[in-house]
Structures are given as structure tokens and as C-alpha cells.
Length: 513
Image (tube, rainbow, N blue to C red; front, side, top):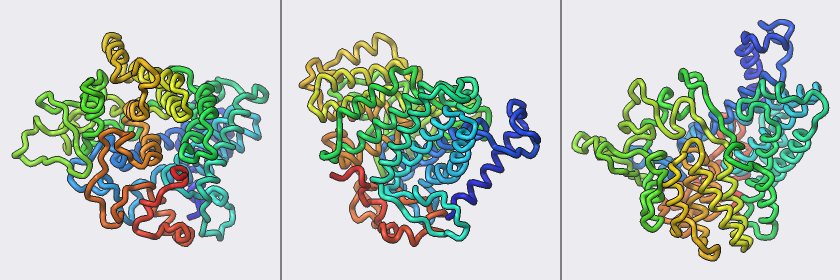
């Protein structure tokens, strides 16, 4: 489908929506009918939609990676299936091509014309981030022809995932160059007008770009001929330097229109409960009896005070014969499959205001730890591993007591005293914990890189009852958005095998040797 037609509608909608705000009155001759949509007007809505896209699709990817599961047994996403003729799992696709799309290009064009190199750099970061998310989720995507201006063009050809990775890296390098510029109309005050995430701080955006470069390079760990662990480590060292650099998105949270998709106001998560896998990582089952001090912060106990989790595909009964006090609660801590009562505040990232992380210092330290481990530098791996755990423990959204933190980090079952005793599974499991509830895309990349291995992800169990279309295989990608690709662009999908019932089980390029 022609993305430019949809993007034009969004530009008009954004202009009309924001034209009545006093702080934007100075940029158009007629505020009721803007003649120019400038960069500050476009950046904030684009940021908002990228975040919501992740949250929308997390309902499905979160089930694949076992952050949570549906209360009804056999739910499609819990057993690694997909819903036919549906846009479920297509929101990031929609937001990158449409809600970002031409609007992002317009923002960068306006920034170039007015020498707002900071806006241009942030725009390039977002375009790279969009391609990175899309290709990691869907495999082959459309880049070269995505914004073709031919009004008669109805088929858009897909590019390889290898090209998508290279293009994301190229854009990030260009973004860093622009974020380093101090000439033109660059200023924190100007960038801060449209920047919800970092409030106009160019240095933090540059660090975010290096973090994305680290993710981009590290995902190639299975490609031994081109994987460069030293480069990954260098990128991490140039990226976020503490929790203060975490990329966090906060919502107004006053209504369903401006609240987090995960919050009780929007009522989107009442049928989901924490997974049995996540519980095993925190209750001592996996880590030699060591209970995680983060458990009461992140997870919720049943009414009887016992922590429980849902097994993939099995759901849980809500029959009257099953006491409510023994059921797994929903992610807000309330009764599962029941709309949250008025006044429900939620917990952890499941609140109306958020915050919702996009990248954290802890996440990147675990990437550094794995890269160093694969290189054979166990001393560096252990140091980064410990920093990753400590960063998450001391983050504003966890912040366990100093005594609990010291006890946890001092336990050799969690942090080995000798670098040679560090295991890959420890790195990957602690990274999983630190990303629970927000880092779904990176978790799925990790699980697929290691082919869902229970040796690496200790006690992870794939569902035993895959849908018939899976042919006994787990999900490896989401299918492209139905209403753009299968309705309008199916001819381009056919050469990829995109019309086959098991296309979602076809391994993506970055996981292959």
C-alpha cells in the first residue's frame, strides 16, 4: 500500500491537532491552518507513536518470550501462532511506515533547511531505530521503495535483512555526526520543545545512537566471520554511562487518550498474568535457591500471598470452583480477566504514567558482558555482568534496599567470585530479568539467537501444542501487517514465502550462521 497517502493524512491531522497550542502559535502565519509543519511539531507525536507501537505489539511478543500469558488455555500467541487476516502484531509496522514515515522525512527535511542539525540527528536515530525494530521482528522489510512518489505504484518490493542492518548502522553514524555539530540553529532549548524522551539533551541522544549500534552489531553474534565483539564493547562504552542516561518515556496518564497502553486506565492487560518462567527466575528455582529481592517489586502475589505464574498455553481456570485467592493476578496486581476497579494504580511499568524504558544502562552492560564472554575475556564479562545487575537493582523503578542489594550481589550463585565461574546462562537470564516488562524485542532477539535453548535460558519451555500451521516449529518472526501487505502488497511477499501458512516460523537472517 502507498505509505505516502497515509502519511499525508497524518501530517494534516498532527497539524490540526497541535495548531491550537499556544507554544506553537509562533511558527505559522495562520495557526488555524498551518502552512508549514515544522520539526518541533512532529518529533513529539512520532516519539509517542513509536513507544505505543512497542506496547501494542508487546501483547503478542510478550507471550512468545514468556513475559506473561493469557488466562485462557491455548491462546494463539502463547503457543507461537498468529491470527489470520488480522493486524495483531502489526502496530510497529504501521507506526514506522505511517505515523513516522513521511512525517519523519518531513521533519528531517525541515531540520536540514533550517540547519537544525540536532533535529536532523534525532530524526536519523528514529529512522534507524524503526528499521532495526522492524527487521528484527519481521525479517525482510521495505526500505528502498517505502516512500516512492509514483502515484500509480501499488507493489513495494522487500529488501533483505542484511541491507536493513547496514542501512540502520549507516543512519546511526550519520546521526552521530549531526548530533556532534554545534553550528546552525542547534540548541537544547529548541530541541527540548519537541523531545519528550531526553528533553533536548543531544549528548544523551548520541549515547542512544551508540547503544543502537551496539545492538545492531551484537545481534550478528552467530555470524562468526563478521561478528566483532570488540566493536560491540566499544559501542557500549560510548553509549549510556549510568542509569541517568536511560531512555525513558513518560505519559500524562490523565485519560485513555494520553495514558500508557499498559496502564489500568486503558484496560488492555487484564487477561494477562506473569509467566511461570519469570517466576522461576525470581523465586530461587533457577538460581540455586536464591530469592530475588526484585520479586515483590516486579511481580504480584496471589490473594493468599503465594507467588504463582502461568505456563505457556495452559492458561488458568476462572471457574467459581477455583478460589480467587489462588489465581495468578493480572499485571496490575488485581483479579485476572476482570476490568481494573476505578482507582487501580498498577505497579512497575504497568501504570498510567509509566515510565516505559526504551534503552537502559543495565541492558547495554549485559550486551557488553555477553560480547566479552564470547570473546573469551571473562574478567571484562564478569565486571559488566555485575554492573548490569547493580544498575537494575538501583534504578528508580526498582530501587531495592541497600541490604538486600548487597546480599544478592554477594551471593556466588548470582555473581561468581571468580571470572572463570561465570556462565553464559547467568548473563542471559539476568538480562532477561532486567528487560522484563519492556525489552520484548531484545529478549526475542536473544531467544532466537540461541534457538530458544533451555541450556542458555535455564528452565525456558516452549509450548507443547503448537498450531497445526507451525509444523512443530516455534515462531521466528511476525508476519507483516495484514492490511497493508496481505491486502495490497501480496505479490511482493510471494517470493519470500510470505504467503505460506508457516512463514512466521522461517528463521530470520540475523540468527543464522
